[in-house]
Length: 119
Image 1 (cartoon, one colour):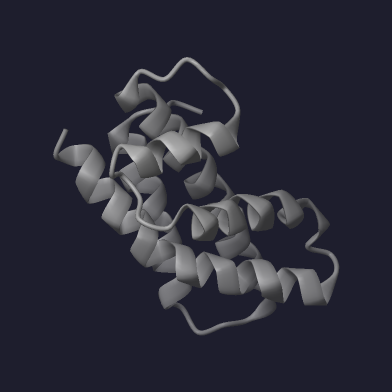
Image 2 (cartoon, one colour):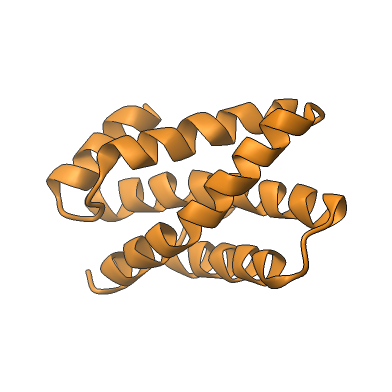
């Protein structure tokens, strides 16, 4: 996975396209997969932009908040947790939870994209 603002932007667009479709199990599952990519690229791209040395996602999220890239670190911790749950999406309840998180993520991910591009 290439880590760059451009790749992050492409991943966000892909998630947005999936979330814009009428919801079916297939759309939900595709959205979850795209959400996974977005969450990973979000923190890894911010890490690269900030020049952070740690590879611990939660620490990178904390630094993102300290540097004004994100407003609500707890919400981003939830995104990370739900991204980690996505390997268990064969469970309908978990799949719905992760899908809902993907929907919440999109506007937050776009805010981050704008801040990353302004650096």
